[in-house]
Image 1 (cartoon, rainbow, N blue to C red):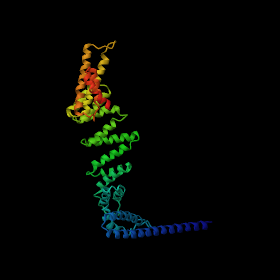
Image 2: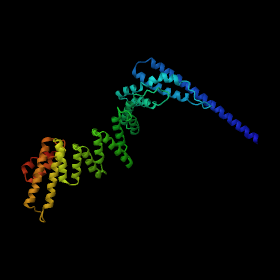
Image 3: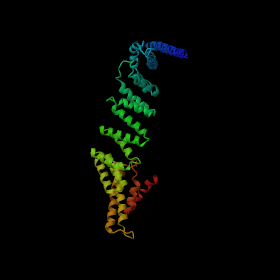
Image 4: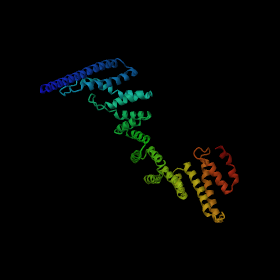
Length: 369
């Protein structure tokens, strides 16, 4: 019985030895076949000057060199790694790999996005391969364009990955940050996603306050449903950082309008107009606030029979009159009503004042809408 077990053990060792030799031979053979194929590709590269022929061959050469190196660096049965082709292939393929960014940009200008991304990805993926000489000067720009292409192709995960690479290059960090934040915005699913997004966006905004895109994305976020309680704090923080930020003042005023704080809203909107006398939406909102304040006054001051005292009537009329001044200003600045719809509230203010002729003149405009 003991002899039988020993025989089986010897046979197993022999089988393993044969298998290892077979694998080793197979890897060596695959490395040689792949290297022979690389020889052919390089011969074709050396005999062409046409970009349409050169760039596909360059991509093929780099891929083939990587595959050859994969087989060539497999350990033998003693665990030793003795590559036969790496040194030669490194010398002859590294200059070809250096052409991949050029290939990517060539395809990019031709709107061949898949080909462009293939060349750029291959350049980035082989950046740390020991096969190639360390010359990755173009990594920043390549990562940026790879990110941009991935974003345009709706691959947000890949776009964010390449944006992270581009962020390491100060020449492309600013543009890469915009892509990254837009990727995060497109991938908002959970509350954790939203938290991560807004923290990153606020950080970018603090670092680059001159970039209005970040501010507008923050406005979009804080004015979306579910963030109503955060809007005012955001607006106040922005005004504290920059008291000349007219959009922050406008946001503050709009929040005050939703809370029917008409006097406060008028003050905020007037600050906007001080900063920009042609800011039509703010001018319009001041008119709306005065009309709304007039209606509130009327409702609060009527007696049990629905009548107003002379003093109360004067207050109400004064608010409507003030509203017409601001709405007429909108009319002059925006006669075609492309920015705001001023005709109906102006008609209502004139009607409330009893100025029937002025109100009547607006009817045709209202009926057009």
